[in-house]
Image (cartoon, rainbow, N blue to C red; front, side):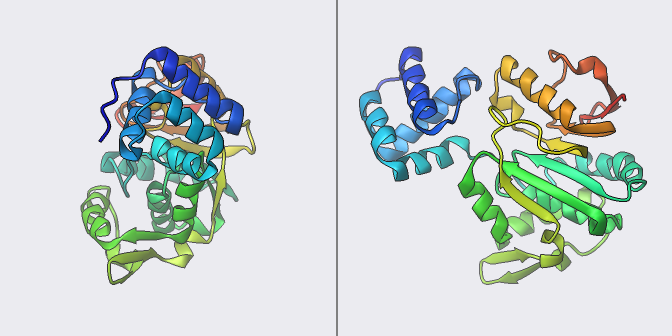
Length: 275
């Protein structure tokens, strides 16, 4: 572990500028405290003692940058996280989506796929998966690569079983994966309608129209300026009367779209575009 002192705001700006100018990833509107903590954690793990050394490595060693990006953007995720959200989704949203001949869902900031697989199970149990296409996107290519494998540790799957039951799951959770040694493989049938693709919420635009946009526990890492821009992106991505689902600790309160959406569940943070 190094003997480095905390980095200053000016030094943080220098690091973020290097990343933006060299690789095109713009973290300048991420929540300041959170991004600083993550940068410092990366420096500690890599035993990089100075901001000068960090900038040199970022500019000159692409493999280091890829590791840095992976560490910087890793999000905590799990299957059926916040079971009451999935119960509300099942009771209040899926019956409405059933009226569409083809259902398109955008899972933004999907991380390593756990919540996307949860959504696929929910759709399967509602009889909707066959006519649904889920677009699962993330800024981090390493996250997407892991998600595409459909592999989750068996230990985690045991922990997720409780979430699944609390969310109102209708079958034996173990029916949805094949366990081998320490890993579990999510069933192919659940994964076949999922398209994993890289998308940057900061710089990329609307790419389709969706009946449901789901982005949970990602916006907490952004400042209010960026949150507002991303909420407008989500709003523009919704079909008329389409649904938006956000994290339990996230809010529309300070955004330009707050009056353009009806509240479907204030506790589960599910909203519906008015027109």
